[in-house]
Length: 66
Image (cartoon, rainbow, N blue to C red; front, top):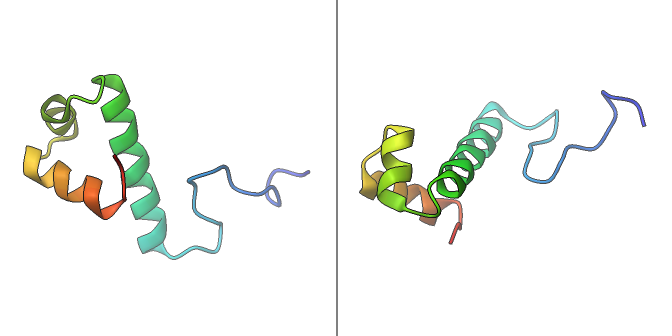
C-alpha cells in the first residue's frame, strides 16, 4: 500500500473526514493517552489536559470511553 492511499489506523479519521470529525478524533485520542498515563486517574488526567474533572467526565461520556 502506498502512504496516501493507505487506510487510516483505528481511531483516526479518514482523509475526507470533516474538520469537526478530525478534531473529535484527536481529542478522543488525547483523552485516552492522558488516562493511560495516569493509570485511569480522572482527576490527574483532567489536570494534564487542562480540563476540569467534570469537563473530562463529560468528554468521556461523549466519546463512549470507560
